Image (cartoon, rainbow, N blue to C red; front, side, top):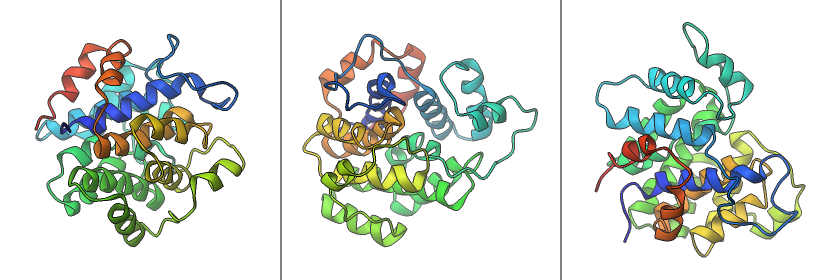
Length: 260
């Protein structure tokens, strides 16, 4: 049975599972779901920040991002974001990186309409990722989560995303796999490829495995794809239970504020 916060847990699990393969990729050995050396990264920390913001009426997202990032400063932030966090008055820096898409899962969980999902996703991106592609990546991910939670088929989700965002979602997973296996950090690369892996997956775990074989930014790619897959399939209980060994209780408390 699907839970309202499945997409958030799906995002965090993708991040943790992918953390040990980042930069070098996951093609060099069989992918293991949760190695002992796995850890949560900036993807999880900022997902929690957005979740805390969206569930606390009147809170300020920029303040939440700064609060959590400073508390968990060794989580592996990108250089631009790391500098942004330490400024006295952090301002948007026009990023189109995939960070806006990896932290947006809570938006797709709480939105009551597609229009609200798009609006909140834009708001979630704006403190840092105010580039049109950064906003678009966040909106596409949140929209996919919302539509999956609404019970739409993969074909319906794909059609709506193509209509709204003009992403090329007609490539096959085999095409992605055969293309150069690189470290993609931009929304316009990561988000469509993560969605294609979801569309061609058979389960949450299958989606995670597929996406980590198409982008060497394994934690973030799996975080994005995992959020959509968990919203569609539901979050596997065994994976969710194992995830608890890798994240602080504080994070679980925040995610559990998103209730059915």
